[in-house]
Image (cartoon, rainbow, N blue to C red; front, side, top):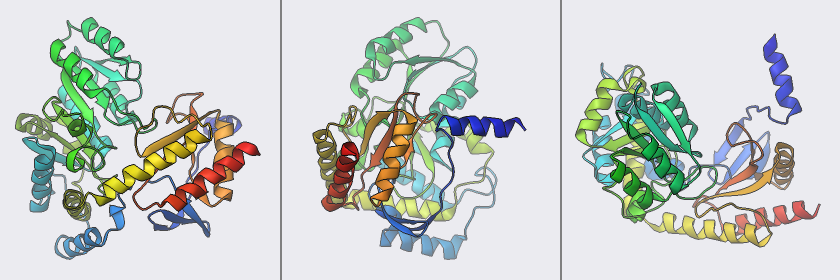
Length: 383
């Protein structure tokens, strides 16, 4: 079949991927194929996936509600704990309402396709998450991509689309592969001047940045300047799922028009309970967040001291740009030999020629762990 030919071509380009089974996961440490490894690939930024209060909340809800909802949210898949979580998310994000989806991908897919269609336009940063790109393509609206954080190009796109019926200006707040922040105040001002609706994906910032972990919007004092905020329950909150926050009219529109919400089984009670418990924890205890910031700074300084290009990272996401897929794979293999798990990042996750290792720092790491990583990379550079 042609499929095998395509797979062979991926092999030749060092682009083929495969699934590796993790046998044990204890936060900052994994066991893969019987080998213990220090894990720098997790988005469980605050270590809440295994927090005793989160795990206990899951046990309690499992006894009462069972493992799954058994239905879509519009039929019988909405429980009181879904509503409780949505109310808590809206209060936390300082919006009128919120709606929970089974994944962040489905949240982005649902909100974009519900708001625009043929005759509309979407203006989006080049490095926005794949779910936003896919949502834009599926919506039928015309997509305009501007250079990463390029305000002048974003402004030109807004002016160019002035005649379209409805326009969305869309951006991640914290970019998942580069670790840098979008220029939120400037983007919001451009959209407001142009009369465009704004959508902000806060997946990698919620729980980590801003007052009480409310995200990059809060850090930039922009809580009221973005019409739609999308978040995830599967990173800092340690659970699974996604959510959309905004006006009550927006949420009612999604309930009626977002196909990725309407035509899928509701988020499991266990995920709902885990997310709600984690949401309470991040508001009660700022210590893990502050610890994470310090550790991320320590890693960035260590990598830059070795001469690595960490792009414009300012966050817990710290990449080293290596260029070719072969070089990134070689580096990842060296790190694994040194007891560190940090897979190579290759297209289509990033653009060709921008292959890298993407290190994710968590509050469960220690400075000793980071020293181990930096020393391993120092040896690799000298080899």
